[in-house]
Amino acid sequence: MPPRLEARDLRFGFRPGELLFDGWNTAIAAGELVALTGPSGRGKSTLLHLLGLMVRPAGGAVLVDGQPTGSASDAERARLRADLLGFVFQDALLDPGRTVLDNVLETALYRSEPRRASIGRARELLARFGVERRADARPGQLSGGQAQRIALCRALMNRPGILLADEPTGNLDAASAAVVLDAFREVTEAGAAVLVATHDPWLVAHCDRVVEL
Ligand SMILES: Nc1ncnc2c1ncn2[C@@H]1O[C@H](COP(=O)(O)OP(=O)(O)OP(=O)(O)O)[C@@H](O)[C@H]1O
Image (tube, rainbow, N blue to C red; front, side, top):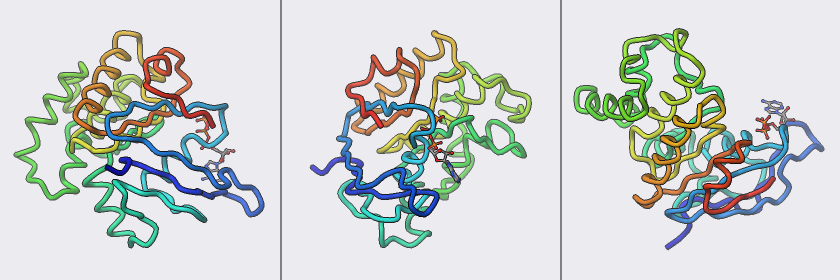
C-alpha cells in the first residue's frame, strides 16, 4: 500500500534564490500520527500548504495515496482536497460571515452533500469538543481556543484520509488538548494519516514520530 501522503524532492521558495525546501522528502503512512517541528519561520505552515494542495511546489511532487498531484488542474486539486484532506489552519481561519455551524458544514457542502444530512454530524463534532453551545455564534464572538476546536470540527467533517493541522493546540488548556489528541488517535485508528505542525512539547511526545524541519 502506498503512503497516504508523500513529498518527493520538493522544492519551494517565496523569493527567487531563497528556497525554503530544496529537495525535501517525507512519507506518512496510513495510521501514523506525525509531529512536524522546527524553529519559527522555518516553513512548517508553508509545508502544510504544499502538502494540502493549496500551494504548488516549484519542483518535485506531492503524492496523495500514491497519485502524483502535479499535473492535476486547480479543479481536480480542489476535488482531492474536498474528498481526502482535512485542514486545520493556524489561527483557525473561520469564515467571519457565517455561523459556527455553517463553518463546520462548509466542507460537506463542497462535496455536494445536502445540508440536512450533515447537520447531525456537525452537531456531534461540536459537542465532542465542548463547543455545541456556540453553534449559532459568529467567529468574531469566539475565544481563540473555541475557534481552534471549531476549525478542527470543520476539518473532521468529511472523515479525511489525511489530516493536516497547524498548531491545533496552541490556544488550548490541557483538558481540551487531550480531547484533540484523542480525536487524532481515532482518526489514525480509522486508517488516516495525521501530520501536525506544533511547538507543543506535550503533543510532540504523544506522536508516533517527529519530522524536524
Ligand atoms: N505568503 C508569503 N509570502 C512571502 N513569504 C512568506 C509567505 N508566507 C510565509 N513566508 C515566509 O516563509 C517563511 C516560512 O514561514 P512559515 O509560516 O511556513 O513558517 P513556520 O515554520 O510555520 O513558522 P511558525 O512556527 O512561526 O508558525 C518565513 O520566513 C515567512 O516569513
